Image 1: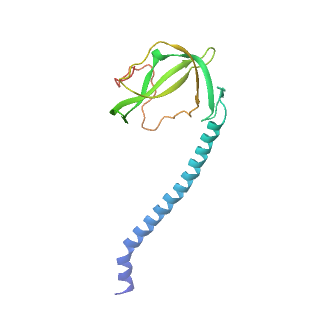
Image 2: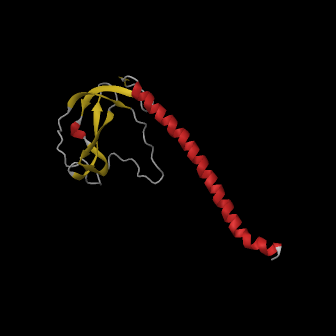
Image 3: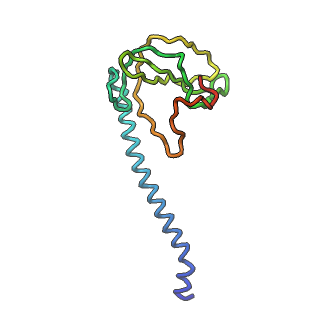
Length: 160
């Protein structure tokens, strides 16, 4: 076998091996970067959990523990993120219950009251409330996501 024919036989396997090696190294570097990001995120969450609740500042950092008072508008409740969960009674469909909390002289805040079954009875009367929780960073629109249009009718069919 001549060196030229050996080179021809090994060219594509060598090229494929080099490409896979580059891909593996790139994924390894990405995982190390992701580990650093995740470690910093968990440290920030721990910092927020250890701190006492403070009145909601105008521009809070994510995971800050805050206390807010106002009128919890249970009549304007909305369900978000429908999913099925296992409960003691079996599989149940539900979603996160969101309520606006109207504050005197300030913008309202959205309170995530947690996951509830979609068929659970809910009281619709507004109530004075003080809520203590964590600030969550806003989600930004994604490239292929729907545009925000609060005036559009509810097309999903399960909103309240």
